[in-house]
Image 1: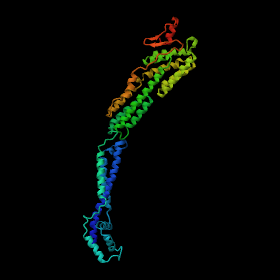
Image 2: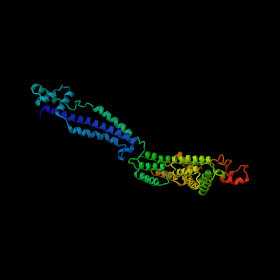
Image 3: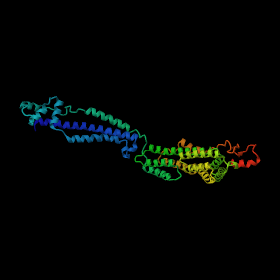
Image 4: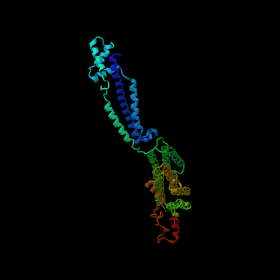
Length: 426
């Protein structure tokens, strides 16, 4: 074998190994970049990753994978003798002597060097020590960058996801199924039902985390609190209507006394149907009462109390017209109020709170009800809605509601006392 070729082959072998190592370090850096992206996703938005991709060690695995990948590719590509000659010329400061001699010998550049100069190139190649030639150009810098990237990724592997660990799939499915069954209950308010359905969908997402489940179930609690607060504000608006029979309806409904509420509604219907001369309600008083009922209907609509909204609207229309058949819409209003005032016991608010608490225990989450929700659902709902005493009677007779019933002023004639008791809830 020609001494020039033999010397360059040893350089080529070393050059291929060095270039492969440099390419491998580039692959390791690319793997570190991919690992950094994966780490950020794992920490901040782990729900977008499948469970296997959210493992904290995976970013570190990408570094050696990237190194081996590009190392093998560059190793298989190899290099030519001319590249080895150029590298040896640069490393040995031979001023392209070996590359030029190689071209002359192969007939690429005939006549440029005589035999004596070719012999000098062969002699230089024989004395080349490939192990001592500084062939690497960026090995050290890339190696330091890879080491730093590995240290950063190793430290990031100990940072837990902000959304917490993943949910156990079977537990998530059990909790989702229970809440899904609850959402089918027709007595659940629409806003609460929609929140339950969103929570069910979230629990069934791939890669869902405990933090996601915590927020989703807390949203149900907040929805319950808002719906309960809106319901009670609506009922308070009804209770504050300045009419003695309406307040009798509210008091009876708050006790669950449907017959008492119906009786008060019948008394109100009689007043609405009678003229002022017969002890009924004057037109201006009917108009004021109808406006109050309309305002309460709007509040019920905002609270999504559909049945109560319709009953209030129908009652307002009957009162405004002085309808002789007002007993029917006012009776429906009494029934709707009795149902609405009992919703904390019979329409599923407590069932929703209990079901969400059970789902959170199934998912190994904090099962306690937030204080604001407990106050809105349990605290406020447990206290009766206050019914203010009427400031004045609709027929001009003053009366105040006390614990024992109606307090009739001393100036009222005895023959009128029965009428006062009848109209003011005595």
